Image (tube, rainbow, N blue to C red; front, side, top):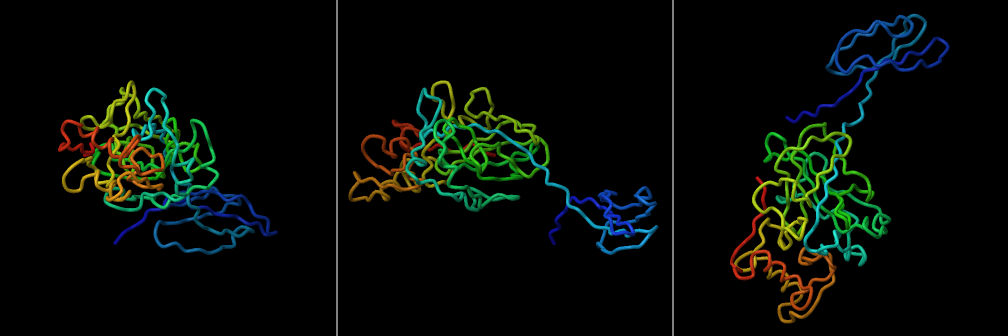
Length: 319
């Protein structure tokens, strides 16, 4: 049996004999007795099956009830660069998917082994107007964010889809606000995923509260879990590009490699073709799947496993 706990406040609304409503008085979130309500009303209650009713006392009516407290929220301000669309030396990414009208209004991160939807995540949507912003706040793509147990980084506690801007800021569904989770203030490991890049996670738990805390994954000073979890590009770090089949491994040759799906998409008999699509095969996120020629999507896969060692693999760094 699954039990869901609700945080509630018991209140009593006192109505005078003339019918005027007196302001509700909060009496507790548990059981007990309160004798300090207006008009000398005595209210007793217990935690258990809720009984609703009205009683006439001291010239007025008392109607007990329950009011659910507002949810506790925790804010976080991740910053991350995706290698695919990152422009070296500029501190920004390109937004070809947005300018090409290819970003979907509903999150692409459906419940799966790679992107489990836990405690409220899944099905996030945005308004078309969110994709009209230009400049550094223009949306590059959807990302997926996890809050993990600060004492056990293997345990995922909360998940959400979010949006990443050209300058790397990860924001909520309005395209500008801090990313908010329905979660208590606590210390969490923060992890950011993208559908064709390897994810990254903070090595140490980060104390989060309702006021967003910056977690700058682009900075080399932020410790991340594992070894070479991100790629160093000049003075910043970015998520490794090329996980075309979203299995957590970048692989150029052999079974389940990330090169073949690109060729299949453009057509194995016509490798010079290009296909316009919102696809994991579009490694550089310019809106086109391309196998050969300049700005193709195959080369980043080879470069990231090692051009002189194409049989190598690069594995995501998560517990």
